[in-house]
View 1: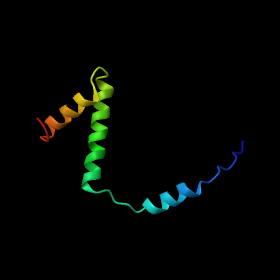
View 2: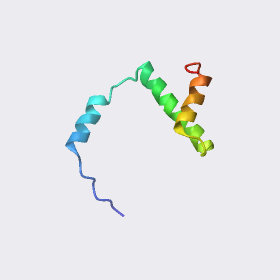
View 3: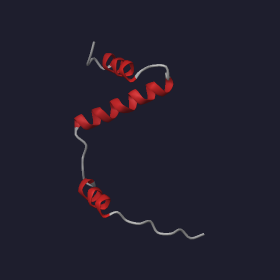
View 4: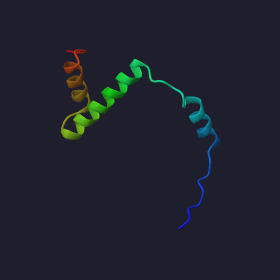
Amino acid sequence: MQSKPLATNSKLLALLEKVKNHVMTKAEKDAQRKSWVVGEFMLSHPDVTREYAESVYAKVNGTGA
């Protein structure tokens, strides 16, 4: 079975070209890590709010009360 080729989006291709050599900063990596940890925590504990999950993350990382 042969697939039809996907239509290209010139704006998307231009954005991909612009960022293809991007190296994440420490702040970007930290934000990505926090997002992943908070998301995983919320999957494991569906009864908690995002605010609570973020407060737990902050306590564990020594960045909050």
